[in-house]
Amino acid sequence: MNSVKDQLSWEQFKIHSIKAKKPIKKISEFNRLIAHSKNFFLISGYGAFTDGYILIISKDFIPSYGLTKKDEINEVKFLIRLIKNFIKKKYDRKTIVFEHGMCACIGGLDRAHLHLMSVSKNCSQKHVKDSINKVLYNRKVGVKYIEYNNYKLENLHDINQIYESHKSSDKIKIVGDILKIKDIQNLPVKEWPMVTLNHITKGGHYVFFDSGDDETSFLTTHNFQTQFGREVVFELEKLLDKKFNSEVKKMEKLNPYIEVWRWQNYMFEKKVIKTISDAQKILKTLNKEYLEEFKKYQFEII
Image (tube, rainbow, N blue to C red; front, side, top):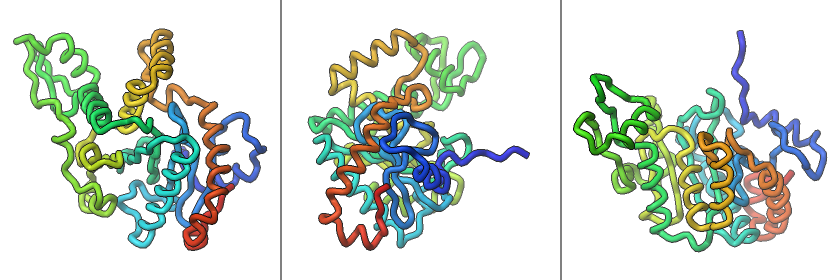
């Protein structure tokens, strides 16, 4: 019987970080470890189209932060503050934090992982709102199905194709309206992750997205499919960084059918490697500032 490989295994990252040659010149599956605390570890994320992309991952095998033990929540929040501070000091950028709870998005076997991605310091409330609404439209979130030529289309690819080419036609029936950010804010963001427990124990999914602004943050039980947060940040980068937008257009011209924001399609290896080095250097300088927390949560930089 074949077992599914745990691609976010603490044991594997710990072993390979000891073996890895420093400085890292090429990324392999488990050599991206930056630091760890008593119950969590930090790695540089695949698909790093922004500077300082880091994941906070549970050492215990739990599928969602909604299942985190109550006495570990403060440890997670400390790590979030720490990474935000690193991103501010090193890149002078803001941070967006997000999680796709219970998504099983890593090869069918998943453990709780929280994304922290940097965005421009010039990123405004309108920029974030417009980017979220654009991704909701891209994914046709809220459209349950389309009836066309006596067929009931429920697959996202089919819905997109017919919607874009026939949305004004009387030949199709669209069931459901495309949602906007105001329609998806159905759980209190500030009560993440514990407020999701009742929902996920019934088999539900959730998406947590914290932009640092109440109007453009959300915690929702709507199922958007995976990498929603990454796609939103990607749209923000294109909107606010002309050079990045130009590079993306070149990539899309070479292969118009590949979505650049999906980590499976583009690793952005140079930034993955740079984030490891940058984070380890800056986090060491923050030891005095966070001395009590470093001791309390047994925080160790690799």
